[in-house]
Image (cartoon, rainbow, N blue to C red):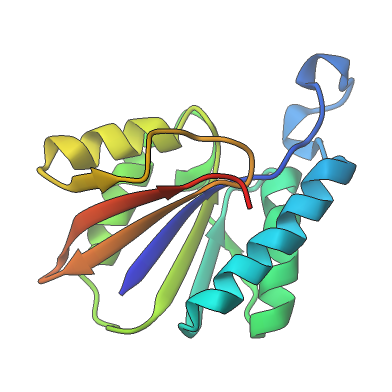
Length: 158
């Protein structure tokens, strides 16, 4: 199984948003990033079996194009919301232990969560490649083998 850990697309300046930050939508750049992200997923040519997302509107909107293309619904998972890095790491480790070789599971989260998850995985001995980042709509491709994550490859914003 391959797990993609994706940061949501661009959602404008949070300090200019007057509502609940969880409701902040993608801006025009983020909508375009979500469409390009779907193109990257299609090129991977793996069946998407599951999409999990933070409850934040910007995460759900980032997942919309690929969910529509692959005929799956995004499942909201509280372990992917801001401030939940420890829970997200636990989720990734649990998912790595499931069966499903040749399949793709996608998780959408936030900039305060993803780097912490990658740090935790590196502490586990996971090999890293492709740089270190967490740009809008970027992807960490997590390769699993024998029930654990064995490699993490960073892909910048498509």
